[in-house]
Image (cartoon, rainbow, N blue to C red):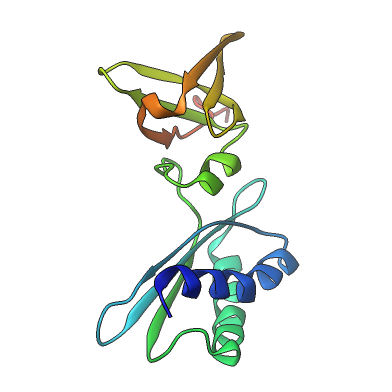
Amino acid sequence: MDDAERMALIEEAVAPVVDAHGLELVDLEWRGLRPRGVLRLYVDKAGGVGIGECERLSRELGDVLDAAAVIEGGYDLEVSSPGLDRQLKKEREYRWAVGKQVRCWLAGGAEVRGRLKEVTPERLVLERDGERTEVGRAAVTKARLEAEVPWPRKA
């Protein structure tokens, strides 16, 4: 079984459990290292996901994955939030980031920041201070979330 097939089977096994916990699967990574592989799942929900939720989900997913027998041999399972400044790489991550603040680096060195409003295979639409900017996907060399911290905090 190649990695793409393995990832599809893993996602098929974990998706119903993630959904049942009211969470969204942002990304999953498989590192088939010897002697143990590592499976990382990044999950989120409106308002963020806490450590306790990740722990509960991890315990349940471990049982589900073992029963589904989609991973041969020993592996470590890691479940976490995507992080405040996650790099966006996969299409799923871009779709998840709609509505969030992002920063894109473009070919030629330019940078564009704003709230991600729309994602298509050809372009990204960002909005900043009421102005919309369209960026061709082919021009984006790197994109990441920008942490939105409500400063200054009110006492």
